[in-house]
Image (tube, rainbow over all chains, first blue to last red; front, top):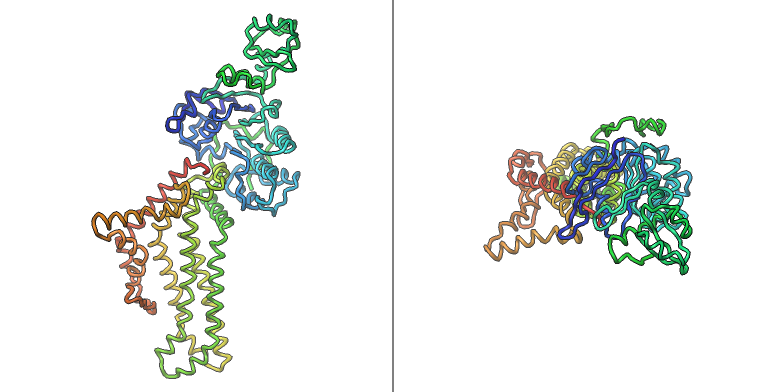
Length: 291
Length: 312
């Protein structure tokens, strides 16, 4: 299988502040990858480098090409929603369809019309008249009708209510995703994309601190809610994180023996959010106890 | 619109290579210009409104034309001036409006898309920075002059028709009108005037486009301050006004070079004869070519700068 995105020692600094400090990553085709990190971790900079919007140092290949040097070739194969509300406010829905159909050789207008028919968006409305959720629906309808091989989403559902957020990812999975496409998404609403993702990338201070598939998360990480008398025994096994919930200790282990832990309390696979806190906590003390 | 719309999802990804473009180079340019017109309706509305106002005023003045023609039965030059005057006056405000709209448009063209963050939407589509800047440069350099020409022509045609009707209704021979109005000459002078001014002003538009892609705020100030600063520094340090003269020449030079005309005592004679046109002199004027080189440099710089521009 060919890599959709491959980075080796990807660096980017703005003046004295380093946004990307040697990112190594490899994203295979046909994956849905969550790039997750705290504010200022370098998520958007990484996406901008992948999209060819910003020059970078180090090796970066997207669909086998250098995104900065060969951006004009890649724009037909790579779609992105950089943010909510980047659709021009003056534009009418019909104009948006006309324009994208005019400039994009891989846009299927009938498909976009089909997606729009499922919403309450009128063809004659201007973007400024639509609610934030409807603008996101419009943008997604257009993007899903583009036959791209890589779709990059940067906080695509920020500020939308839960119904729109859920619908957004449902559409993406049901109507768009297939084995030939790759989706790279950043979001703060980690819980909602937990079941959508196939792979996780945690980024912190310009470095990838965790890269693994969701299957690996299930086999590698285990969380145990301890019976009080077992806390000492469990701590001896070297947890990577510990938190308290309703007076009970929850310890998170990396690569521990499930059966051994099952004897100490209730065992389960940690959520991405808990894993995030644990891994980031290991990176820096300030995250300790954030749960 | 696309040809591959009926493929099954799995058959879409047979080739691991990035597919070559199935689209001609000009199609994105065409749609980019169309979308500029969707967004900036003033590009055609402002000249249209001015044309309507000019036409309205001219029609009112024409109502009294027969009476005034009768008062000058034998004075041929005065009669000619009288008949031709509304026809000579009408196009100028329309063209001036087009140039002004071009200036405001250029100043906002590459700034507005960053301010409203829509640049992220435009950049997500396969339209290169070169095409985008070219489309935006086409508005003041091609679209606005064309609109000004067509509107002026329509205004003159309506004016001509209306004048004829008025003259006939008042019992005068319409030939007395038709003989005086320069039917062929006027459109030629208009097209020539628009072409030379557009070429002459090209560096102004290109400079404004460059400022609009570069400035983070108040592009008006950034467009005006550097020339003003150079002017002031030159005046204080050297006591000369070469730069100020150069700017003045940029504004009025086209009239001077292309029509052999100068502003004398505030009086500007009108263009009556095709012999007043001096295209050879215009094409040989170094100011034209220096200006065009400067314009090209500004546009190339604008294309490069837009590459890593972000919303502001």
